[in-house]
Image (cartoon, rainbow over all chains, first blue to last red):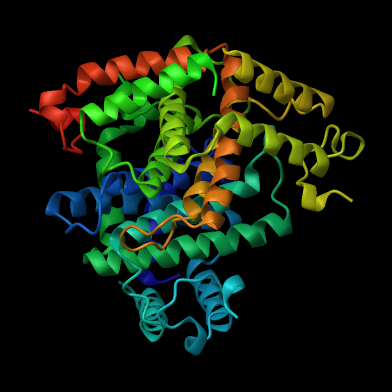
Length: 115
Length: 115
Length: 115
Length: 115
């Protein structure tokens, strides 16, 4: 994918191979795990009213949960033979088409609601 | 972060800047969005009983949702000044320490449950 | 809603009123909280491969998380003026129409996929 | 549980029995489904900045998702032999002890952070 990402992925794969964890890492279980880590990330913002500044503590917690999500995302994309950067670039191109600048500027409407 | 990831991030940032969407992309809202996309990823596996093979259709759907998660993850890490690859490498190191090979091999127990 | 549910709801409302927590319990924050508790419930089943029996410990953990979801669900339905039992009955009627027995028997297909 | 809730539960059980869906409704799959419906509920509030009024349309969508969560929650509690109202009452009692009024009034801190 890229030098640094490839290196990280290799470390992730060796980590789970060393522990014989491939059997737990089915696509379904990885999808569950991404969802659980995403909830732990969101947990940092649970009862906020209005926008609150990000404290160093929240930033540190968030960083760990984002790392977990990224690790499971890389594992799953490897297992499914998906190039994550390519998939994201393609998705962004689709969004460009769905959300023309003049219609979506400053609006949070979904593309299905844009007239 | 890496050439290809940096390029992707630049495209993401231009995409939202063109649409004046930074105001919607608070860390809290990005965390919510990652959680929602993770649910859409998991939705592909909802009623599965036992392991089922991944069809090309599910792989395609999964690929799009994983792309969305990655896009929001990159946006959020940029906004919080977090290097995602560095954070993941650090997290992996912590996991190495928490899950010694000899104790965790073939086991799905949490590190808090390993004796 | 019903004698026992009404009594529970009254206790929930007094609990948060005593603590001056209404201001945190916006519909959006309650929706976030339901999502977080649902993840904690799912966390009990994270790395399962195939169906595993429910241990008394998992049942106990699950019971607490289900209680949390129910409490937030009742709070939110109260705040939005929704009768949860009535809404569920209505939804079940819709599902009856969407999933005719002869077409959906033994199948986990979504109604949009039923021919 | 209560007359109206019992009646609803009976309809839910007949609905899935008529369709031979018990085999899909493992506790794990029901936990996944609650999580997915919770995300659909939260989806109504995704890009909100500050508190926005609840439109009749959002209220209607929210009502349907809350109904789905309640239906799966009742199914799961039935299958695990859990009385949802009793579990919620017990959980509320625990929260009373964890969050003494004088310490938690007007604060959104977790009980582990209350001094």
